[in-house]
Length: 630
Image 1 (tube, helix red, strand yellow):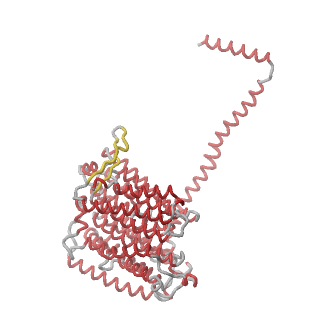
Image 2 (cartoon, rainbow, N blue to C red; image 1 turned 90 degrees about the vertical axis):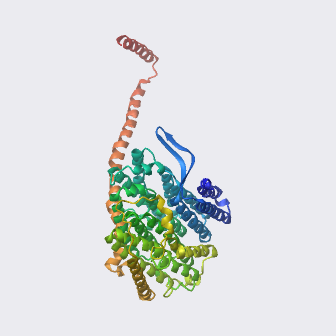
Image 3 (cartoon, one colour; image 1 turned 180 degrees about the vertical axis):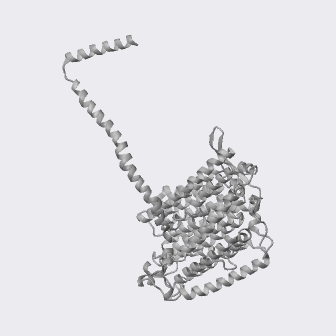
């Protein structure tokens, strides 16, 4: 059955072709069901492949793709522990989001087009994680970038949504250029782009070899763009312009984790470059705390979750930076469950509120939306690390690994964890408690979402509750199923400390963190369930620091000032001087010369036959003389 794993990406590709070619001719019930069924088929094949996997990586060669001189790139897939985990996440969570979308998008005129984009995205994401070489990976990498552009700007009649789509596309291209240069340098260094040749060969290089540092830094630039790390993170919050299922699929569970996947896939190279790992650690920690500081004042329900995603991605990169690759992937997995749950639950709230996303205009939704309230509570408790939910185990493991490796970064993550608890509980209480602050019409139409939306929410809530048990810490179990499964693929950096945090210290930290969470829970509940805790409607009513946070510390304005405006000025100068005067001037001068010479030469055409005979004889004599001289 493993040899049939190539069918996994084929199913969503077929779904894309049928739904896109059928267009509006396909009934909504058929296009939505078909697209969802194709992803379900991929999940079933992925699950069967996972069950039958015997621990030995398998390469599936489909055909010779690129062959030129010494360059030979096969189109082939690799089935191993890492790709199997990612396949289950992509197809499993992807299927639930497809089902949810049937209810969420039922009234949209672009229903079939939306599902065709979703299927195409799943196809490219599967291509990314299944590729056995960097070129196939890069093809999927660029494909998900294209699909994110299409999905973010899905409601293209809104100019602001188009700007958000363009921003995502352009900022990802910056990172992708680094990734592409890294692949070129890999080929120059190793003579191939295939993983099964590169990674064994890399063992001959000593630590911090300049070429390995260059390769890993270039690849990391690609990861920074795709996984929204400082300074290439500002596209992700703006990407909330797309429909809510897009936020759940692309910006929580799959696409933004592509950078994490790529670093783990290249762990052999990164373990040889401790200098690069140090850079990753610092950038990850800075991203985690900075985006948390922005999330703490946001009032758009999706923007809070977006900055939360950026912060959680920072956690994952810190884990990568200290060499805890399997821990990073563990958090990728649990994060896929609870963040997809939170985004979809937010979509259920927005659906009930007739499109309203401002939490200042919500409140008291607990009784009107009981299922949404319950699953949102599960998701919130999971992300803030409340035991025994999924986020508790994966975040605790990251903190434990970082504590052993780097005490200063551990302190940054602890502060970030506290901030995460504050802004998520703030979001939860402002949305579901207090008094209703929306319009009378909104209150009249409040209702729970249909089953096509609530059933995926319940399933994700269950996964968010129990998902962490696949990676129990040593204080609970000596066998860490997740790490044991992934470990055969990993090579740890020489600086990696294999010691674990002492059981007594880990128990103390877990108890202390739980107590702090309980305190924060009751403080935020008291603060945000009263009318005094509702954020101000006008920026001028905020304190200086809160206003700076609310405006995202003016990073977009800074980028506009130091990058966008200078480029516009340079473009204007080139347009007026180089383009208009020099290039257009040269072209126009040729035109004027031809016109002037034609005007002069036409005077020769007198109509006098005698002059024509004279000119002909003169021409013959000139040709003869020319031949005699030469």
